[in-house]
Image 1 (cartoon, rainbow, N blue to C red):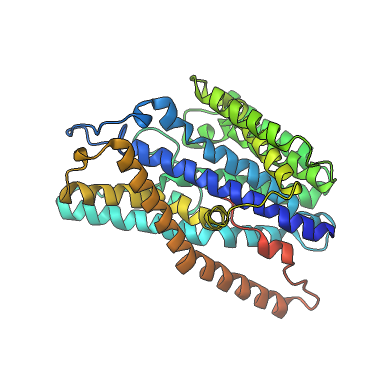
Image 2: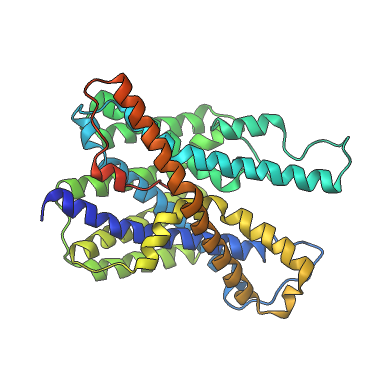
Length: 388
């Protein structure tokens, strides 16, 4: 089997892992919608599984898995840029095409819903629900505080995409300048940004953004990608490594740890799980088609699941008494609804829109470059991050 074919097949394991990561995040937010974020004036549903805050919070590890996968994929698609076959701007343009349009649609939907709710229940003379400055900041990837003091854009889950775009810009710059010293140069940039924010930064959102150590998880993914490129990953010990990674995830979720240590307690187990999935792929373990589909749709699922969960929850509360049902079952139903909805959005919006924008970009390339290189089979196979 050729190296390219083997690489392309390996991406199926990443798709499976992306699908699982997206599902973890969905269940995390679905559980919070009926526990921590349940209306304060209403009785809480009864829970068994999701009665523990540790279990509810553990689903957030899906974000860490996304960051690891993103780091791996960027190294995986980097050879044409490292070898100067394509300019770094091509990398940024392709990444922007994959990330920004769907993010902008989801953020616009949040603005529309917020104003719809506001003008339906409030005076026209009252202050709007979202300030213009926050709206502009959200669409230009400028970190801001939300109403709870968290560094989040108007689309709450979009905070991870801010780190994704920061990573992409740094990655493109490093590839353009240093070519093959990617991980070391990225580590220096991330450490410098983090140290500067901690030492000289204030209490503003931008300083808080750069002070977050979660960016180091991209380096873990890059390291796995580098090992994969050098064919240093084999199928040996795939299953034991997977169980070790999952065990460390559970152990890391069993007790509270500072947010600054998240890249250790959740990042390292995620790295082990990513490595084990690659090993399982090399061992010719087939991925279930449903997980591959979830992997394909993971970006849309991630972007829209919170909107679906909370809007459908509020509608359902007006129509039926949700307290009549076991809380765990309610979470399961709403999580599945969000996953199905995200998959539909992927089929009807994300996939055709991304295909259209890529065709438009390639057409522009053919008009402006006499010797443009068409998109490779590998690049076409790589999904959005989602991660991220």
